[in-house]
Length: 172
Image (cartoon, rainbow, N blue to C red):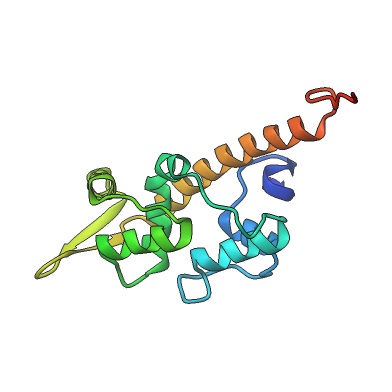
């Protein structure tokens, strides 16, 4: 029996406990499953987060957090460009979507690691390498597992802030 997923990992039933990226996007208002296209982009997801989750306009991602999930973020960015992409474009995408100014010394070793693990295929071009997702099922599972971890931590933090017993307000 498949588990039904509520908001961000809350679930009922049996089966997989992890929410999917598609579910997250639907919950953020799109109502349909994204496909790699101009419609499914990191910018669109971030816009949805700002409008539905009450994240302030001045919100910026912490670069250490981006680096922590860099492999999965790279997989998402590669998948969004279904015809393939190169390292410089990925670095530009990271800068635009996550305001992460990562060096080639950070990004390229991670791309090589993804290649060595079989997560991405690399096609040698004349002056660059083009990256594509090698195994979509494996990529989805990696992204799902990372997402579940982040969502679970987020829920713990959310409950800690909402629970007056954790951070009681002291009236002077």
